[in-house]
Length: 412
Image (cartoon, rainbow, N blue to C red; front, side, top):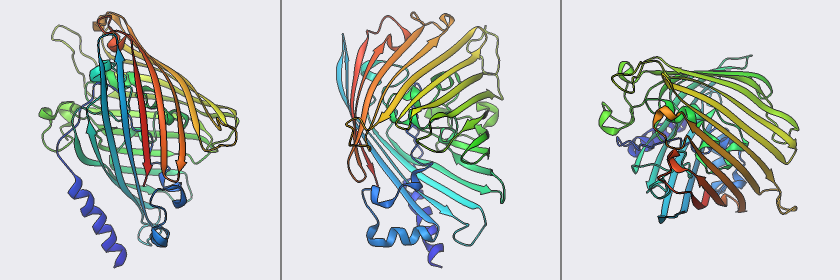
């Protein structure tokens, strides 16, 4: 009875947080991967610790609470504009193991809510890739994920359905989640080429996902997600629309090889991702209509136990004679000060290319980022980031500029 009341309380808590207003972004804006693997962190590494032993007690009963708050203090500097922005993102959720509760063997429910606030830095820098991966254009509070997952006994197969983030297990590497620049965490070509929003930050949609593969070796992820309308006025109700005829369905598949050990030397991940829409979306009345589709290659290579190289190459074909491509290369290390093995640093470059038929005066936008994250207390991390932006929005009308961001992260 106690567990049932706890489950009911969690559901009501997220219901109160739900809101119908949708934030809209102009490009990729994936949140660092904060849900998958968050449960594995020991309570001693979280700001609220173990709640006097209560947290460990309820975890043994199958209830795991997770939460993070990110706060970005950002400055945009260009030849024509200088501006300061403050952005924040709060994620609260729970992972319920029905197996540990003795209800359904292999069953699991994940539910979370998210709130975003602040004005976007891209209003100053005018970049499409977005220097901060928590930027939104509308402040709101909403459901983020609410899905059921069933693991098949004696196999590496798991099936999940419900409101879920495509980017939590697809199109991402562990090393790339360090960066604040959005295109390192999510495929910029995919985000910009699709006619409707992707089921990822800041708005998710209902979907079905099938995963095969354990911690090491071959794996495969297959998913189908309802398209999300880009503007609030296009929504039937709430944060997403079930009008699959109007918004289409995005099908995605990722297959590859990976190793779960974070200090593995050699190939840690190499994967091919393909996606396509079920609906054709014409860009103009006199233009041939076709179904958007794309391919991507993701790789992560352990140079040493402390240094890793990450690369992404993708191509997206949204319509006839139009395409996007994105290449992102980075290197991530830890232990910058030698004796401090809990800090991380990263250096990367992301280049987004748009075909000239898409109206871009300069066909590319390039972002270079140098960042370092330092945990100076349990559950508290500070991360400065310096980014140089070349040809923002792929046009010569916007001057090159800088994005200087200081991020505070609190693991609750």
